[in-house]
Amino acid sequence: MNEPWYSWRVGDPETERVEAEEEFLEQIRDLLRDLLTKKAVSQSLAARRMGRPASNICTALAGKNITLRTLAGIAWSCNTRVQVTFEDAHDDQ
Image 1 (tube, rainbow, N blue to C red):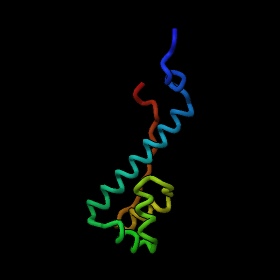
Image 2 (tube, rainbow, N blue to C red):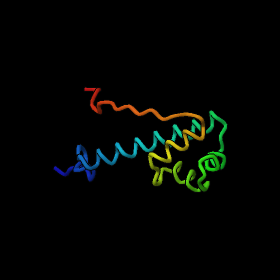
Image 3 (cartoon, rainbow, N blue to C red):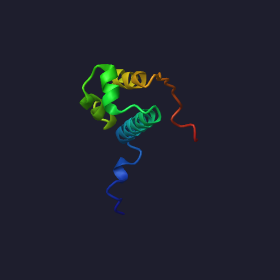
């Protein structure tokens, strides 16, 4: 029996890791965009407050090369702090 072309990737640890990374980055991007909107802080204002070029903020919000330092800086520019928690990835079982 022929398996679907994607079946070899189902349950593949490398694929699961990459998907977890992408999901996390997407959550971070969404949270940062929501924070900037809620606090009425533009990307350029956040960049000025951080002493960085606006392109750094744009790049971070695009999910390219965002560092923890940039994440904390954007939060700081909105007078907010970052709090990190970890959850078991398999709580649903």
